[in-house]
Image (cartoon, rainbow, N blue to C red; front, side):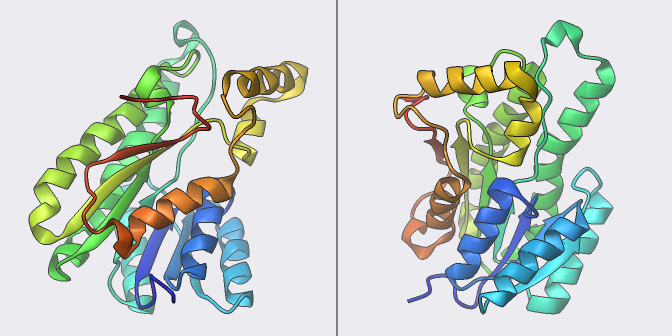
Length: 254
C-alpha cells in the first residue's frame, strides 16, 4: 500500500541532504514530488533518481527568500501535477560563529532563508490547500530552537520562529483540515553539516557532538525523512501543532 498515492508534495531544499532523502521517501510512498531547490542541477539529479525508480518527480528552481519565486515554482508544480497537498519546508542554511562576530548582513541572510522562506512557502500553497479542503505542512526546524546552540544565535532564533509560526498556523488552519507539524533534527550527517564543520577543528567538533548524543552517533537523512513521512501520511491525520525531535536523545523535551 502506498499511503501518499495521488498526492503532490512540494519539498524545498530537495537537491541534497535531508531534503533529498525526504523527496525520495515521499516518492517511495507514492507521492508526486516537486523537487524545489536553488541549485537546479542538484534538483534535476534528485528528480532523475526518483523517476529512475519508477516515481514521478519534477525539478523546480526556487529561491525561498523571494515570495514571487516561490509562487512561480508552486504554479509550475500545479501545472505538472495538480494542486499541492503536502508542503515540506526543508531549505535552510547556517554559519557557525559567535553572535558578537556576526555582521548584520549575515543576520539578514539567515532570517530570509530560515524564517521568511517557510513563511513564503506556506503562503504560496495555502490557497491550493484550503480550496482542496485539506493538506499537510511539515517544517524542518532544529533542536537549536529548543535548547539554544553556541555559535548559532540568529539561526536558533529563526528556527524557534518556525515552531511558533507553525503552532499558530495549526490553530488557524485546523478548520480547513490542514495539519501543520514540525520536525527538529539534531546533528545529522549531511553535506551542510560537513561544509560548516570544515578542517581538523570541524572533525573534532563532530566527534564531540557524537559524545553528547545518548545514542552516540549522528542522525542519517533517511531517519529525518521517516519522521516527515509519518507527519505527511494519513496516520497523522489527528496530529497537528506538534514538534518532534529526531536527535538520538540529544533533546528530551517535557
